Length: 285
Image 1 (cartoon, helix red, strand yellow):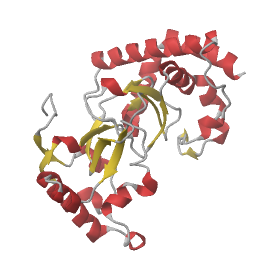
Image 2 (tube, helix red, strand yellow; image 1 turned 120 degrees about the vertical axis):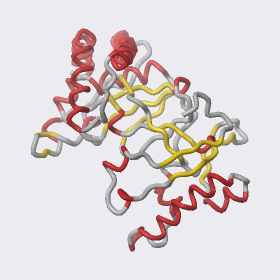
Image 3 (cartoon, helix red, strand yellow; image 1 turned 45 degrees about the vertical axis):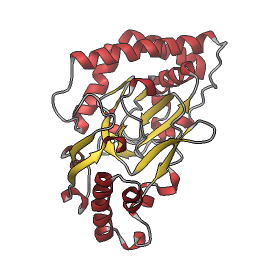
Image 4 (cartoon, one colour; image 1 turned 90 degrees about the vertical axis):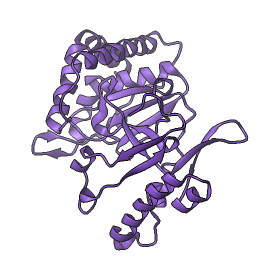
């Protein structure tokens, strides 16, 4: 891929890696072709979310454009392949036409009246995303413990769009975002939610909103403990990022490898995690 995505026509194809989690008949389907770079976005699958770190945010193509409204705020607009054709985006129109054709063939009976683009935008969860807030907090939906990370939009090379398999919150206040991630990565709320998690063969496995049932106070800019948690979180982000550079996974992150690297990062952050747990216990207790 080119270092600069601005105003390019790029050759792309469906990733082989994504097929691992896909179900039939979608697992065996693939599209290849050319597309205008303005339809490329970054996203984070659940397996990309590590404690205080985001590993290789995926590239995704979407039939959307990001425009400025009359308040000079960014907003997302959804398009069909025919609309893209009318607007002169011939490559994107062809790509998404292929996707629409597959959808028309393989969609289930209950989705017969739903178009491909509207299914993608189910309950407007795509077009209503807040892409103006500079900071995003993400955490995984499944796993033994929550892993959370702050995404600073400025640090991402493309517009960042949230995948449906993650939980998120948007923030304008940087310290508030980092404070929350300290709490979500702490062992304290993760232990407190264990009795409420669904369980599989290997024990607790789903997080969803269970960790949010654990009480913790809203961020207070004047609270020294809250500010210290935010500071520790920033330090942990920097150290986790460097750890990944020095120990880049060489294989696809399967469930087992993902669990191991999440544990390894927390071990690497032992000093920060010890202080975070101590302070979170005070905040929650």
